[in-house]
Amino acid sequence: MTGRPRILIVGGGYVGLYTAYRLQKRLRRAEAEVTIVDPQANMTYQPFLPEAAAGSIEPRHVVVPLRRVLRKCEVIGGRVRTVDHDRRVATIEPIEGASYDLSYDVLVMAAGSISRTLPVPGLAEAGIGFHTIGEAIYLRNHVISRLEVAAGADDPARRRAALTFVFVGGGYAGVEAFAELEDMARYALRYYPELSPPDMRWVLVEATGRILPEVSVKLAAYTVNRLVERGMDIRLNTRLDSVIDGGVTLSDGESFDAETLVWTAGVRATPMVAGCTGLPIDDKGRVVCRADLRADGVEAAWSAGDCAAVPDLSKPDDPRALCGPSAQHAVRQAKQLADNIVAGLRGGRPKDYVHAYAGSVASLGLHKGVAEIYGVKLRGFPAWFMHRTYHVSRVPTLNRKARVIADWTLALFFRREVVSLGQLQMPREDFRAAAGAPPPGRPSEPHTG
Ligand SMILES: Cc1cc2nc3c(=O)[nH]c(=O)nc-3n(C[C@H](O)[C@H](O)[C@H](O)COP(=O)(O)OP(=O)(O)OC[C@H]3O[C@@H](n4cnc5c(N)ncnc54)[C@H](O)[C@@H]3O)c2cc1C
Image (cartoon, rainbow, N blue to C red; front, top):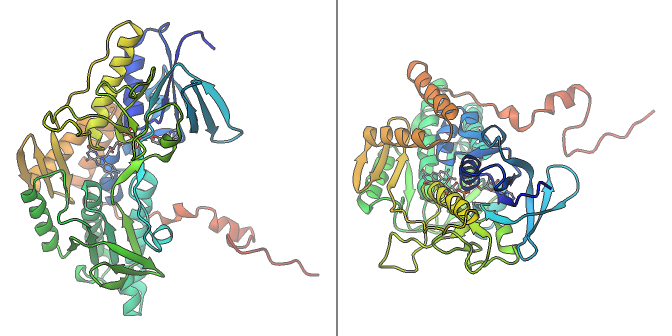
């Protein structure tokens, strides 16, 4: 123990990284020590996941190594299992070894969110989310592998199933992933003379009457029209009923086979948060916060981002309005949160988080996009350019900005990368076979003789 108060940050995503970064910049050495815990060693810049999946950005360039950026903080690789705020103790499960307790003085809960799923039969077995860099890389490899399978398939039904890609959920994450991957697959088809774009079927299933709730109805309708013009199938007011043995059934009665099902129907707070004792939790499992980002009615506990219910003061007409789960809020809240902690340590008063929503930008493939910034609507190339400019200005560290710009610049001069590194999913298979081991999951042959 150093004798200094410990600020414990649970989660090293947007909120965790930006809070720790600002604290290390602003705090004097004797004022406090900052400890950040995350099972992953990197913060993921999620808005770039669709472009990483589509091969426009190298996946390593959309993650920011915590240890490199947070030199003055203690970084612990592990998962916080429980927090007992009454006792000021968190139980940490390290990447390896037994769990242990860590005492702290000030808590920042920044554990973010996970995919919000529904009890759809077969979903857990057949679906994949789009929330992590691992999922983005997997999907890219998987989509290209389906082109490979279809190119070699004699059976038209098998070929059709391999080339049918279903996405469920039409928020910006879902729409961007859907549009970017289709764009990449369409481009890749030039290397598969056996296949042509009409052979592919891309289906977006959305339970409500519109997609992209973050932009105006007009811009959302424009997006639907552009996607339909590309031959994509957009099902509004439709739900996924089941996905069993490769067969997808929709609530409009249609059934078909598909070998890809991506679930992008929103997020919910990381479940660990709801189990924290001593913190106020709402019915959606988020920390109930005051506008200054303190956990409501609790001393020395703060929260922000996707796992926090923070009042949205930009809507004075609606006192119950809460900030939505977005990177925009997460980054700005983190800065305010860090400033409020510093103010508290120095005997000052915390300030409320006030931020008007700036708008939304979405990429729909190379040179295509939609954007609505401070009420100004953009479409096509200008929106796509705005998307890139905005996000490169937001991705943390100069190092990552330079690498992302370099990826885009190289893509201008060389053709798009359509390499599938599917072997990453099972890297030991060849060596195991060479060494005479049975394939994974199969018991070893009994020895004879
Ligand atoms: C594909 C995609 C595209 C998006 N595009 C946009 C966009 O264009 N614009 C926009 O504004 N927003 C966008 N978002 C939303 C935005 O990324 C999130 O709102 C933002 O990441 C929330 O930040 P956070 O810090 O709350 O959570 P996160 O960034 O998810 O960080 C949470 C961290 O907590 C860690 N953690 C979880 N459980 C524990 C535990 N028990 N112990 C320790 N650590 C834990 C996780 O490993 C993670 O690192 C997008 C999201 C996705 C998935």
